[in-house]
Length: 543
Image 1 (spheres, rainbow, N blue to C red):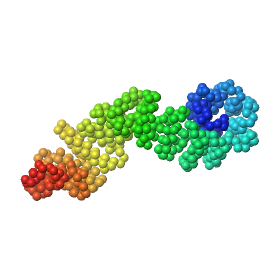
Image 2: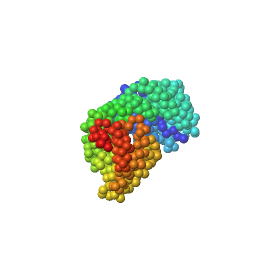
Image 3: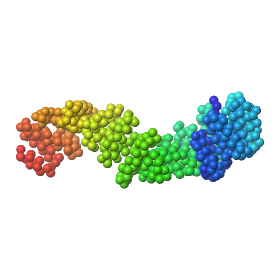
Image 4: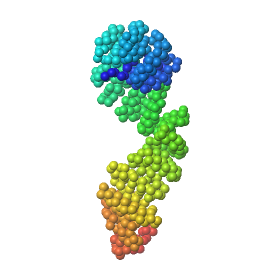
């Protein structure tokens, strides 16, 4: 197999901090096999003061070659040679293209041009070896070894040799030996950024501590390395240490060579780590720089929603966010939390139709998300549309793999409310809701036999469905079951409202049956929960 990830050479023995926003940042990413990021930085910084265009074009040529675009690679190498004819590596790039095209003599001529310009540079021989390796590692084995020997002769501890050998071993999936070579390179040259990162990447899953430790060493040697900052932040993120990841991203996003997309992750991490004020301030600063930054607008609102002192700012934030989303839904996509927070804010502002619109879109876009139906149900409940609340909650139950006792009981309650709402205008529809409520209340009573509320709901439904003349007795069997469970509670005050309804009903039921003693017993239970109710006490004493 051909080694696709060409390794760069060591250009200079100085730290990256000396080359802020030049070719050096792109080279650093290339050394770490992060080709797309390298390409971005090399192009971004191509015309900056201090950038060596011969170097930049060489690596842009390498990247084009990796992308399979030989003509683009050759064009970059030629531009590099024009920028500085004495820089040797562009001749190696041109030679490699000729080698891959079967023009061995022309390739060797280019390699000779490179050698003449870098006689004391071991990297020249390593990169020529790499060119032969990429063309045919088996048949070119002797040539490759001779080139490596020449490099070692110039420098017995050549970082370039260690890195090439590590790449070959990694290509053969000999991870342990590859790691050893990368570690040797890092120990030889503290500025060999690619060695640290490649070593860290080998171990980030199997031994995260090794990975993090190596990246920390990289930053000790080169604290201004954007790549090192980013990789350490990502190492913490991969290992679910979000607090440390946020801390490291906070340093990284201040580096002028950070990537804009990483601002999104930092904003996410601040929110996830519940650093809401910090997250709000950061998102606000991004918006101040670019008012069209939709991600920043999202996280500004998300964080503000967690900060009570900002409650008066939430509605305009929600409006602005939703308007930006509606203006370009494909580009400004909502995550589930966006739909829910915006809808809740509309609901709080009593703008029910808009809240419903938001959640209806959410359900259409992400139909499997059960929480959307639950949120929509709550919106309808707030507005008194109990039948619609029940319908939305039915969707929540249907999408929930294992509904809890609380879920089932809530469904029963909402269905009961829906039936009560429809009772006068549409009795047939009302009874459908009542039957659903009975089914779910019975199911809830089986799920947790210690709970009284399912029996209270069943009793309420019985009263609603009974003919008027029978309503005063219809709930008695269910309410009696509820009383049994209420009496077993250590603190009945917590269920006082329900208990008083039940005690009063059963007291009147027994009064109708001419059983005053039993009636008074229930009425007195009522008074235990409401001892200051003088009128009720007067009524009981009159019996």
